[in-house]
Length: 94
Image (tube, rainbow, N blue to C red; front, top):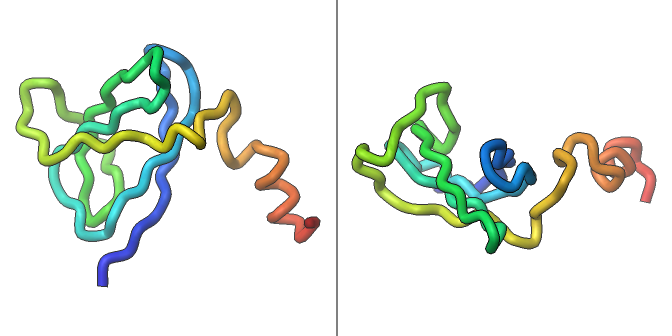
């Protein structure tokens, strides 16, 4: 069974925002993750193994399986682990 999980990215070179995208556990190879910010669209080249991002990087000349576009609704100036909503949910406050 293939599972999906959200992965957070930081667009450090262009718009400097955080965003999320879904990765599946059956994803293996070189992928391009595109920033969903319409004024940015920066490409992040990553190697993914079993749905997890590795420390390896790839480049524009590599053969990429897919271009994954981040979720525009998740664009944020702060990372998820520091968001007030995430902190409240971890404390059990509704």
